[in-house]
Length: 163
Image (cartoon, rainbow, N blue to C red; front, side, top):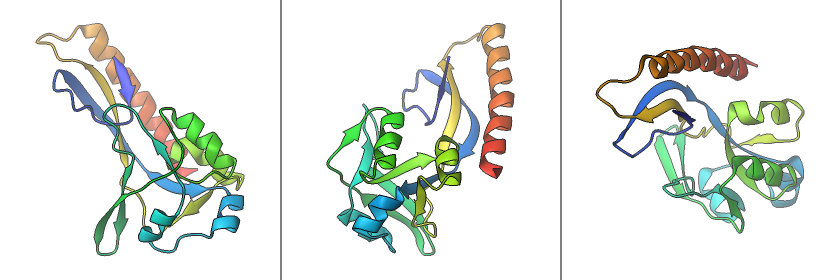
């Protein structure tokens, strides 16, 4: 069993949705002071975007919600990582714009170490799910643990989002 911040494409897995997690684009104030804050999504194409890359990752294509519908952008950057915490550290160091779930960066936002970018064009939310192998008969302990985690995480995510 695993907790994933995406729905798996592997059809041999069962995914039970926990919650949609709001995400946002953000950057360090120093980065924006040096490079300017984009006012329209297309301006991200001229910025250093910090990209999460791993097998099957779609993070290099950011989809933002605009007043006229979704805006999909094939963003680029000179650095990428397969670890979201590394991307957060790079953003804090002023290396570029990053796409992160709100709950992962809430403290940095509160302390103004990171600031929102393009707040009028929020990214699509990420799906948080409990994932386990597909079986005819799921062991009771797996189901009980999944139920417990879903209840606990929904409460935790809703607290983080309202803070």
